[in-house]
Image (tube, rainbow, N blue to C red; front, side, top):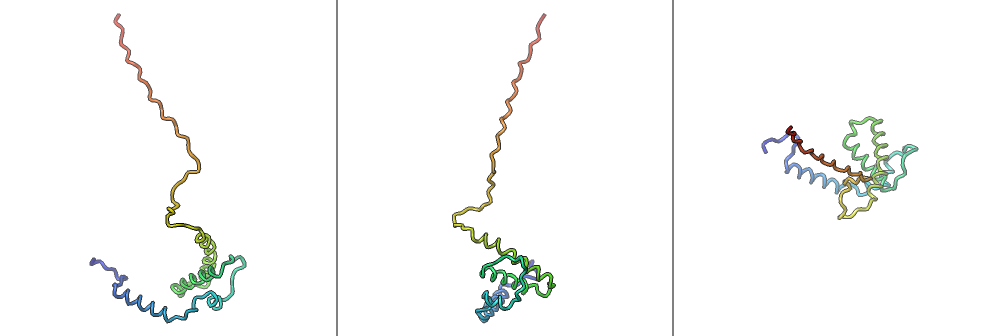
Length: 139
């Protein structure tokens, strides 16, 4: 317990920061992250081969991009920002398909190996019969 790293924060400091964040979130305008407001703030520069996304998917892509930019904006060049925007947009259709898959609470994980074909079992080798020892003849 005496081994505390310099980057660790106390529970009290964590609670204080969480309170500040929740207070700031409650003071933010409610229409800050609606799809319409996000589209109005962003330039309309989408590549020609960009996938067509639903408004919910587009809002999710934009919120993902904004969270990355909020954290790493000062470290990224314009080319890296464009690449992040492209990758986030391309990653959304597979996420939508994955989320559309219906599951129930009783469904188990899909991690079991199910062989496509049964292999033939090799017959076990027949144990060799031992020859009886020959008795030398008395002549």
